[in-house]
Length: 215
Image (cartoon, rainbow, N blue to C red; front, side):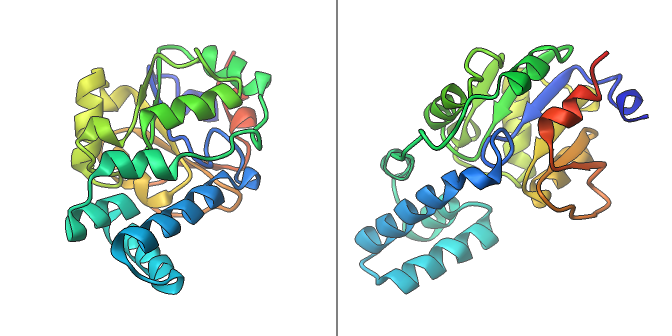
């Protein structure tokens, strides 16, 4: 039954962080620490206030970066380089996942609220380099973040994605609302489900879920 609901899909869109690697890797913990340090330095605030602003902007704007740009006019390029300067050795290659993504029929892309260079490093560490047809970062959406529908429309337009023949895999439930409204099949990839009308499927095992879609 699950395979049948994806039989029309020819555009496969994957988020990056906590989707193409397990949350247990805690990679984003490193990024959050660097975000906090950056906010402390640039906005001249203490750590508790920097942590508060980081979380507040993420909740309000979709990403901390979007909030910093909107409320402080920061240059996104230096920020992205700084916060993504982390240790990727905590990630391990997953040959099974690589093979299953490669076997999906149609076009396969990564679309992340991080930067494309950062995504390339994550994919290399996961053994997923060369598996995808394209990699898009927040810069490709003019630094407008998911969950904004305009961000999805910009990236999908660049790639020629037809949402009605697409599927979106994401760990953040709110980032599946716009793809659902655009006509995509939606999959929430996370340890625990977050039932919502815009989420068609949930899995805590991306590789196992994809295996169910392949002949």
